[in-house]
Length: 420
Image 1 (cartoon, helix red, strand yellow):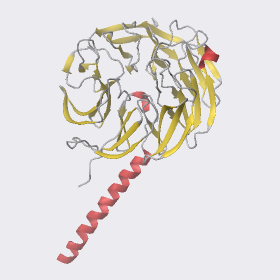
Image 2 (image 1 turned 180 degrees about the vertical axis):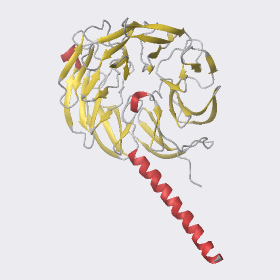
Image 3 (image 1 turned 60 degrees about the horizontal axis):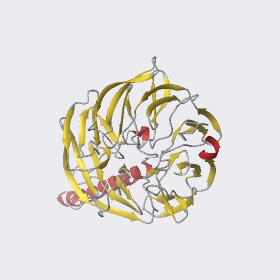
Image 4 (image 1 turned 60 degrees about the vertical axis):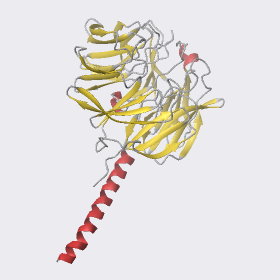
């Protein structure tokens, strides 16, 4: 009997370990982060079983891919593929990799942006086998995810007389049902809906007064209306996704014309912010009055590129206020400070499994634990140090991997908790 136990226990342990590894691998294949900020654009991953603390030099690097091209595009993950974009020579390229970091295909989506802060901006959006990606110059293209074959393209300048600011178009387009929504910002179409299969115009909104900012929208249901919520250069708006009607709008005029933050929306309350002491504010939407009233405003809670995350009533984000950068945790409904930190610097933020993932714009990667009274810095490691505003793509957590993109390089780290 003793010999049987001595034999069967190690065999069983090996079998369970193998099954666990197969389960993790299978979960990795099925994992999906199909668009900028993931499903619902909350920037909160549904991943679990992740490391709660990293080794001193960071989690294990699974692979690194280069060249991704010049630019700031993040990654999306779907159908066992990884997608990003970057400028290569005289074209902006959409790129597909497999889960092992090997190139599957790359295809052009127009000419590169050569103006202020040259390089790609947007992350490809995946929906039912098709990728949608907006070029900074105004070319919106649709491609087959498996092959990169072009399905259709629309010149937003030609069709809608697109109007945008000094940093070009930077919107990560969103798909809802059979429609692709985007904001050309032009007099022939401030916000528009296109048929996702053909690129045909379904409706245009010309009620909105202001031109396109650099904001990527969210879609939410409120007041009986499914609506697209986004920012223009000088306002926050809600647009009926069914017909393009402007259902509400409120002024938000920043001191710096950036307005790049994806709105954080919950139960009729919306948080928006802009950098360089423009501040951050929560508004309450009033559908009857067709506007939104300020609930609270704080100048120090500004935000350039880092994004914001709402967890259990606590709003996390990073200010870039002139004179000091605070990583903040505040009460969403009141703006009350829960905790501030000046050591992290300017970071892009994502969340998964009760942790915050914060990537400093020069290359420090931090893991934060979320607590009832705020947060604590648990682990940090250094990526190759770069000039300011190099690491602007937000961290992506998907399939047990942490994806970090900077310029030509895409890093994939294994952050799964190891089976004992």
